Image (cartoon, rainbow, N blue to C red; front, side, top):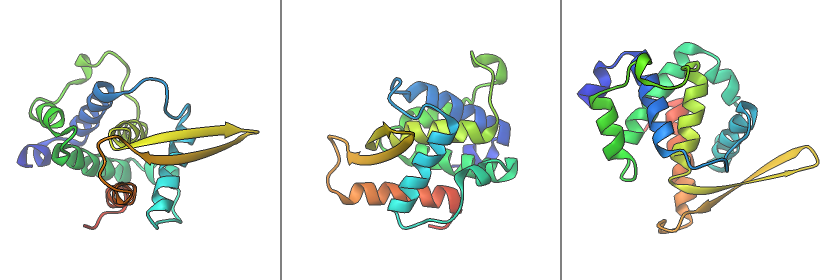
Amino acid sequence: MEQLDALSDRSVTLALQELAEEFRSGDDGPRTDAEAQQLVESLLASGGYEGSSVGDILNSEEAASIIARRLLEVAVEDPDVGDIASEIVAEPPTDEQLAVETAVTGVVVLAALITWLQTKVDIRIRRKEGKTDFDFHLTKGASSERTVQSVAQVVTRIFFGGS
């Protein structure tokens, strides 16, 4: 974890961007930043935390940097993505190494978070008559329905701190 602590905020953002690119699972996720924010808010609500707008939080560069660091820490400790996340933290990318323009931290956090979530739960998005609904289902390797609740609690910790 010392390596992660030593990274600049910019390096953390670039590391998350690379991690998101590494695990991106196609076009089955949210189509817009607003939809991604709704998805995260829906997951937080399923974990019992409602009230704050994810967009409001991520629009603050300072808050987004804190959340980015927490998310990268969770990724490093995660059994599904930890090996690759650790490699990225050990040798974080530079601006010149990434093929696309680096977005603001909040957008990168959303993309990386959605990508990480897709390694934990199957996210089903239903769009009908201008309304979007989200369902969270267990992936094949999950052991119980509490997994969705557990993932929601981790996301709450990423956004709001605590243990």
